[in-house]
Image (cartoon, rainbow, N blue to C red; front, side):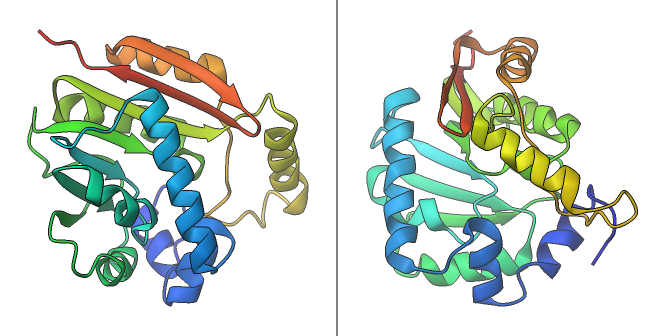
Length: 225
């Protein structure tokens, strides 16, 4: 396993060698019923923010084992799952067996190549930004804008450092390890000002940033022209 936080491919392949390891690292549990329930909750949030349409080609940044893709695919024309880890994508392929409007794409960990420009209706990323450095979070927002069709929609979220739950996560990481012991994978929070700045600087329109317990989340639209 790489000791560099930014070496996402090495880090996440090493953390997902088995199904149980992969499930635990992405969610903290292995219960299939809870996996399904949490994925349905994610769909409800997406419906309330960016909307989910039957004509959409939807792309997930950091799809992991396909938790959300399995429940979203019946409601869109095509679902594309992107992830840095070949191990995660192998497990996602098993989860998505029989769902013929889904496809999986391994990516570098820093961009959405080889997804073409202006080809996607909806891009979303959930419970992923905490695993990325701030520069890489913003780069994915820029990449989302690149691959979206004019008028396409984008959603992202992260733990909110201003919430009690987010602060507890921050403190747990800060106090658990000495500077010399910090592992490559430590979850890091975002904030409302960070998301507002990223959406504005990336050129999204009609964007909004909101909070709920633990989370900050934002959504917006690529300009139509």
